Length: 222
Picture: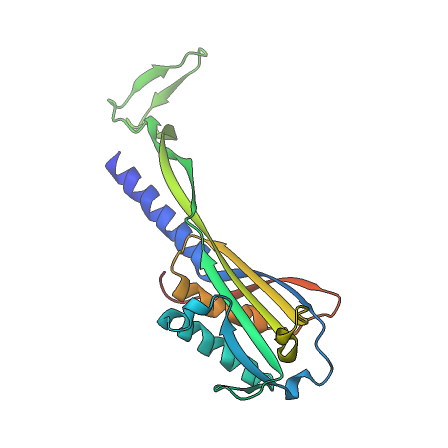
């Protein structure tokens, strides 16, 4: 029985590993950026101003800045006038745990040594002659092993607005990007870089709205 439990545990570990060698993100994008958007200046800020001194925020901001600059935006780092302002937010929930069970297999009958030449009967009236003194073992489900899985939802939001519209009551939003990734890993610093890459993979996307599923290879651990 112990060997079978170890085999099942090893199988589940391999299964879990296979599920985590790719990070999949659901990306939703809407935008009204002008045709000359790539020549504009931009500043990146957190939705929540309290996050400005956060080292975690600074890490994510640097990743967003890299992607924006790759696409032609000029980053404004000081209090200079800018064309656009990009607001970003991120988060992970507390997770949802579900309980499932997997079948445990073991030998049910057979595999016993008998004296050569014995005749064995069955309930259906048939019989066989054991010339080798051994019956083939039969395997089946002998128990169920419960296990729990916790799934976490990670979210990333990025809005780009016209900077001058922030002075009025009617803020002009030009870009709205949302990314959601669901999986066993709750370590946001591990997952966010992949979510940011997924968001910018087809930046800025279709003007009429675009929803895509992006899967990126992941080599590492949560």
